[in-house]
Length: 424
Image (cartoon, rainbow, N blue to C red):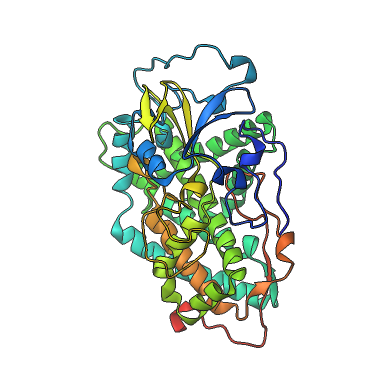
């Protein structure tokens, strides 16, 4: 396949750290050439450290002295060129009043995380898994009814997690197009700062209306649970809006791209596709192999050292920014034999696709269920599934914060009968 070069980025990551090579599933080649802990120059003129080693990444993510608090500790990624080189001190903030828990440190993060964990109950996850199967079947049947060709992204990969997260949060699914449009702009690295800011404002306005509605009309959903739960002190409107915004974006954007990119990867690995076709239960552990192999965050998460800290024998000075390369860390040869090979039967071992430490993904079990059920039904119900265009023509999301494909045209046999995972 030909190399996919990203356009000019609006974030200061060196372009070569975002370029995909001949294989669209591999990390950028330049990352494989770097030491596990390397100092790099950003496009804005600032410097940062990139972590490509698996063990070194776990050390950083597990140590809260590497701060996630982007209010008190400003990242070099957020600096304008005219700000580079000027002294930056931690901002003195007595108490965070927002709810952006992904960008908080303990104890503020701990309080919000505990409240959210209480909403991700076993019962709720079990009910959602049944809905995942129902939604998958409904959309795949619609694809088959329309013929024997379709685009996996709009017909299946986007609506499945969108419907699920809407039900989890209590969002009217009829409103999904609105938040998908605004989220797409906010995450598009080629859009101007003004365009992205306007999209973010629209997302927040959408969420403020949702919170106000759930305050007056509670239901059996996560937002209602947070509003009418027994948290002490009660969550403020700003905290509720921020929490819902983070969950809505994270709950559909990442899983949608994993579904589409995972399908692409299976189609390009016929032996692995056949394993799923013969025995869908291979995905019970196989989804974690796909998550490892296809890590979809280009670069990040980011942290800021709050004191001089040593990682892998390298001292990272206080105030310096650290970028975790999850795609490269998940290909560590010392942790996985033949890490460049997709093997759905590989024994399940810890990876970093869901992060590590106190910020490890809250919805990881839901994401696994969406991938396991969604991919099994897709392969089972679209017989003789194959790409409808050459693989090198599949448009890659090198222009977005979350990697994947913009579209995935596929074809299947209209004469054969697809029975789905339950009957396979």
